Amino acid sequence: MRSSPVRLKQISGWFAAGDQVQEAALLLSDGAFKLFIWLCLHAERASGLVYASANDLARALQKTEATVICYMRELVEVGICSLPYPRRIEIQDRLWPYQRADSPSAAIPAETYVAAVRRMFLSQGCVHSSFPPADHRLAEEWNRRGVPLQNVERAIALGCIRKYVTLVNHSGGPPITTLHYFSNLIEEVSQTPIPPGYWDYLAHRVKDFELRWRQARPHPASETVGQTERK
Image (cartoon, rainbow, N blue to C red; front, top):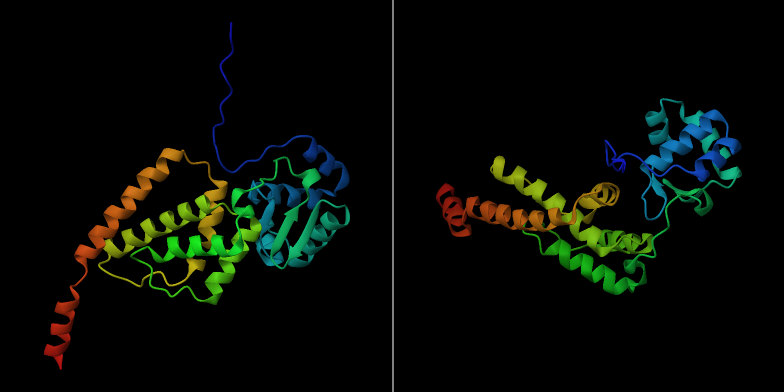
């Protein structure tokens, strides 16, 4: 009799725990090990990176910031984590259970990658921006991190559909003016397993809501007339 395949009750909020976790348990104090597990649960699967400050970690673990800094120092000293930049923690390869992705986007020249991000960003009707240097730098950072352009496209679609729902339901509101609007969504898209077919559906919904939003907006000519009448 064949046994039924084991199914996860929850497809997000977990990570593959194997020999790496056992090794970490032997190397770390209880508090530092708890921090390691938290980092594993929140790290990008493809890179092993977590974007958080000591204050963020202290709130998450309900510890003092000084205590978390001690735990973090322990992780670094035993070679489990590194701190390549401020607010960025990288779990080292020997303790990260996932194969680090040789992302296709990482091989794309920076100019090409940034141009693609710029095009996707500025093509949205709810975006009013000139793609300033800060946005250019953010796109370059995504390229260095190996964020696939597909994930950027999906994050922009997810952010725009949420913005359009707000604009339509509340009859107006401020547009999106910066690429940083989608930063957290990059993390959400990379960490949440979503069936590929959903993104095709979402793309159609974005177009539908953009059309509804444009139809609900006052016509430029009528705005001019109104302004003239009020003078």
